[in-house]
Length: 181
Image 1 (cartoon, rainbow, N blue to C red):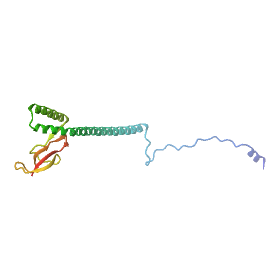
Image 2 (cartoon, rainbow, N blue to C red; image 1 turned 90 degrees about the vertical axis):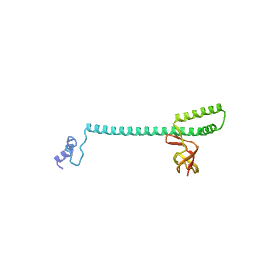
Image 3 (cartoon, one colour; image 1 turned 90 degrees about the horizontal axis):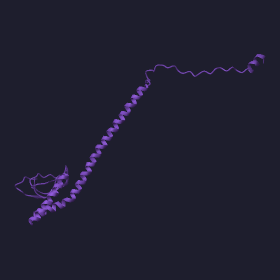
């Protein structure tokens, strides 16, 4: 080996300065890529999403509230109908007692009690139905007998054996009737 070669081997290599990694130059987006949204566009998108979620939650709450009110009204009507149906036999007994021959003072007392029951039912929205001459409706009437009555048309209530009661559109008790042929 020559002296120069040794010199080259013995000298440390000079350190070259480190260079920063080359970043690719910013270029315009190509037609296939979506442009990066600005901060303002991002915030507007977040606002639209939040507004949409708010509107959906509000609609769900309003639907829940509406369903709850309907359920509550249904429960109330069920409770009223159940309670009224428990008292109907008492009212029936009072009406039968009024049909009997009795002392005038006793009769007035029974009439007063029957009137008070009627007012209570009216206050609750319960109405009696079923009269001679009404058209027979199987949704409202329970036909227990058939009768020949020349004064009435066929399928007409000839006699009411037990009054029916209705609460709104709900039948509390069907009227028990005799129907003409």
